[in-house]
Amino acid sequence: MKLTEMQEELNQFEQEGRLRKVETKPANMTNFSSNDYLSLAGQIPLRQKFYEEYPCLALSSSSSRLIDGSYSIVMDLEKKLEEIYGKSALCFNSGFDANSSVIETIFPKKSLILTDRLNHASIYDGIIASNSKFLRYSHLDMKALEKLLKKYQNDYEDIVIISESIYSMDGDCADLEALVSLKKQYNAQLMIDEAHSYGVYGYGIAYEKKLVSEIDYLILPLGKGGASMGAFVLCDEVAKKYLINRSRKFIYSTALPPITHAWNYYVLTHMQDFQEEQEALFRKEKLLYQLLQEEKIATTSSTHIVSIVIGNNEKANALSKALFQKGFLIQAIKEPTVPKNTARLRLSLTSAIPEEEIKRFVKELRHEMDILF
Image 1 (cartoon, rainbow, N blue to C red):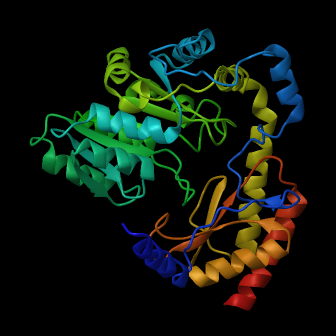
Image 2 (image 1 turned 60 degrees about the vertical axis):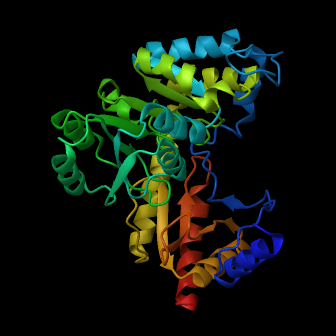
């Protein structure tokens, strides 16, 4: 593509109100855009305790896992994961890499992939790279999923269902029990992405519901409630060995540095210590929904991620900017991240947001929406 063509497309994005920019945000605002749900990343006392326990770790692995990057802390981390979850574990550099790698490596052309229509871009990248046949079912619609399973169950030896547990743009939850039931009934495989539930629900919703053994590929990205980066893939030992031998993103990527894996190990092994943060988050979640209902501000969300659909890009941008002037950092989310004409404000609640700021936010939101609409 020529630069002139790039510029034309960028101009079109700007006209449509969906041009993305990388900007530094002010630090002195009430942040409704952070995915640090338990506020662990900003806890200085927690960080100090970590550095006391791990004072002199390297800042780079300088190698892939298969060359010289499988240092003791990452091996200890995978062993600890296996003890907790009862499944083999493999660490990846990001949730994006983990999702796309599992799909493109494990499910080749002969597979049929049934994917929730609103699954993350990393899942769709993996699907495209796999060259597998794939079909999308309506978001969280178990009847639509079962209809596809019935139709194609005899046409493919290998069918996989892919879903997230909590959806990042809608703030709603998949029915994991129903997914497991359908998987077993139709002899399919099941892959679940727990990016937005790890930490918030301890070891994740699947773990809390005692469903880990029923999920073939459980992905735990760490950039949200895990307050870090990287991802854990929990699977059968044979699948782990296959990923080590065939996953291009695993084989050819420099491993995360020892200090990052040590932090991931620290958060994992101290998960039971974060109950206070979890309770604070759920308390503020309840408060926000109550206030939104009182102000008649609609949302279909049901978690710590709250989506308020505006529809029009320009209005969503205007609302975001108006709230920014009032001291609230909340981004307008537009296509292609969300479907066309569903531009929205996406609120990410964290345990550290003061309740008074939540109350002030809802009042200001109602005020600005009344002006705008």
